[in-house]
Amino acid sequence: MDQTSVFFHFFVHTDHWRNTHLPGLYRLQEGAGGKECRRDGGSTITQQLAKNQYFTQDKKIVRKIAEMFMAFKIEAVLDKDKILELYVNSIFFGNNYYCVGDASIGYFGKLPSEMNFDECTMLAGIPNAPSNYNPQASPELARQRQAQVIEKMKKAGYLESEEENQ
Image 1 (cartoon, rainbow, N blue to C red):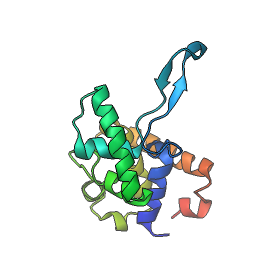
Image 2: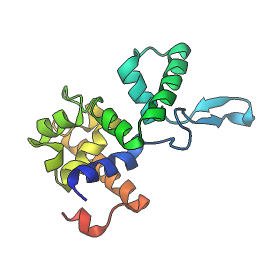
Image 3: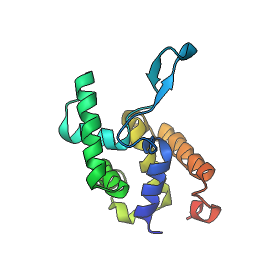
């Protein structure tokens, strides 16, 4: 598996690619006594892509509903790999880097396809909280987040000890 594929595996299995069982929708969870519902986690990657590409960041129900319908349309024409590719090329990675290519060049001086294991796992953890986890601003927090990414990959069965030592 090439390093770009490794990065996408790490990215998918951290906190980013959730809610795959509900296309275009975020999860709802019953609240206390089953009387209320609340959001559990955030929007799906597809919803976030729709919001980033087509909508404002306003926290209004009308936008959320429009975002949901746009997510359905996106998922009708694009597969998950393409959606993820578009998403990682439109999100914030800290230090004014708004795509995976800019972030890999800015942080490591190389293209995403040239990143090694250490760089892939570091970069995959940044979007969760770019101001906190970018390696230039907070090297220690970035390493802690990287360790979480690696641990999640181990638990998901996507990481073998030989890959970890590359």
